[in-house]
Image (cartoon, rainbow, N blue to C red; front, side):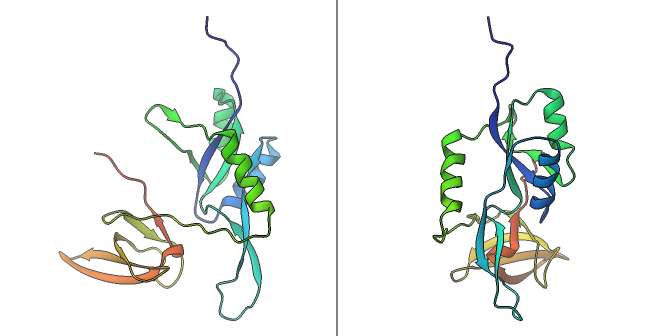
Length: 175
């Protein structure tokens, strides 16, 4: 007989762009365990020389849940929440050891290198900078943190070069 007891596990919750803190606070108010790993980086603004705390994984928070239907609904109905990351079978749990390792990493004062790896042809959205809102197709990396994105219009292509940190991969749409 299968146990009726649901075991709480860690899951990744995708959030709206720049809503990580809002989602984290909203889940905490609902007494749901949440982990938003943050790192300290220099501000990107030219007029400031300041260190700021930013999410390690922009657009994502970790949430611990047994995914009871009511609990699941509480999570996804949080302001700024998009969906739990998973596949066609449902949300995929993150190993407890992974979350513990991330906690240790962000607790240290050592620099942490991050980034997402784009593949040629990925649909992307520019979320920051002068091209914010542009949807295009990733083409290639140009230097350490610059990427080239092609935008199709009128059957022709135009390209822009943007900072990799200002771009998010759009979810694949399956027809």
